[in-house]
Length: 81
Image (cartoon, rainbow, N blue to C red; front, side):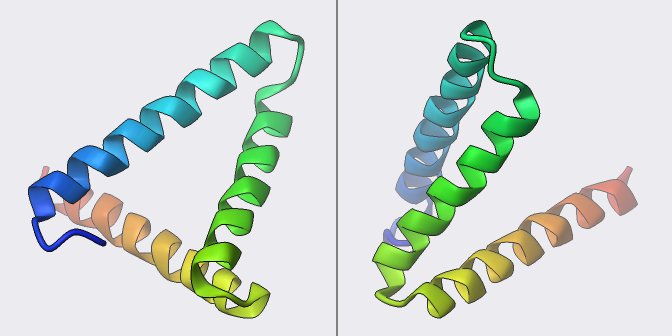
């Protein structure tokens, strides 16, 4: 989270996720496969992470950490059900 206020940060994250999902739908409408849209999104996430961290390798590590967090959230939700 970048904001000291977690609620604000979560809202910002959801806005960006929504933009990305809309971009995927728009891409699909132009004949782009969801696989290619997902790959393009991964590269775009890398571009953003690299800019954020200032180094390509640090950007990759930051993305790995993010994926680990998402995986833990999914596993936690599954075990609570």
